[in-house]
Length: 115
Length: 115
DNA sequence: TGTCATTTATCAAAAATGATATATATGTGT
DNA sequence: ACACATATATATCATTTTTGATAAATGACA
Image (cartoon, rainbow over all chains, first blue to last red; front, side, top):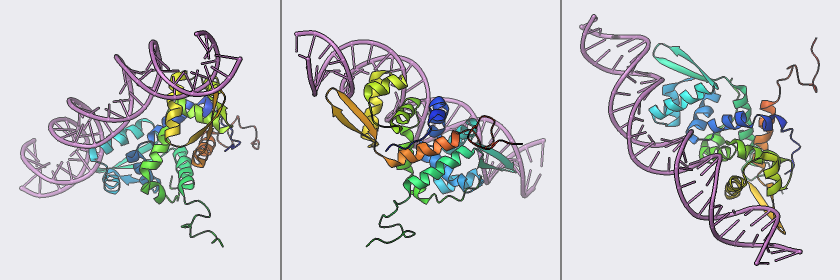
């Protein structure tokens, strides 16, 4: 499991880093961020896609705003949210990799077949 | 910010994924995992390196155990902990990348120098 | 028995969460 | 201007979870 990572930055900024992870550490917010990863969306669309109840969604979005990882743009009645923090994307990418079917696993159609 | 990620796996397993992130979403546990990323350590060493109060550290370690991302080995009086979940390493690697000084930033000595 | 290393139990304070109600902002029809 | 609808935000409340601190329990070994 030794990975040879240079973790000094993470260690030194543990509060900041863990704070960012905390934002993704609830299924609702994680889903929200997943949707926004595909591009800007108005609140109503996020609500429809994630199924998160509107007031709670709004509270979560407020939190993401406060933490500075999303920004907003108003277009008449709608408010569009989008991700602004590249660090979030980096983490999401890692999650995709980490949770992708393991190379060599039965259901990974893009890889070789065994035996 | 569009990243072209295949997030289906993450969306489908939002509970599981966010649960894993929750483990890293507190500075103490994040520090613990950082230390373990460098290799197996006994509790006393983790305590010394992270400065986390011993009973709380033990509770955090119990949680990591319960969630299955560390395993233990007893050697007489000491108990050695080590990371067993490759997904954790993947996330830590992403964090290192995300929080590393931006390429071209003044204090990144390993990269090219500009102008 | 005693000591070291670690775990478990307990408690109070703080934070997160889901649910519900209310408020604000924008736009529309009159 | 008024009333009304839509889109989003804020407030409140009860419940649960997390956290730091402190005390007590367990397991290994001299």
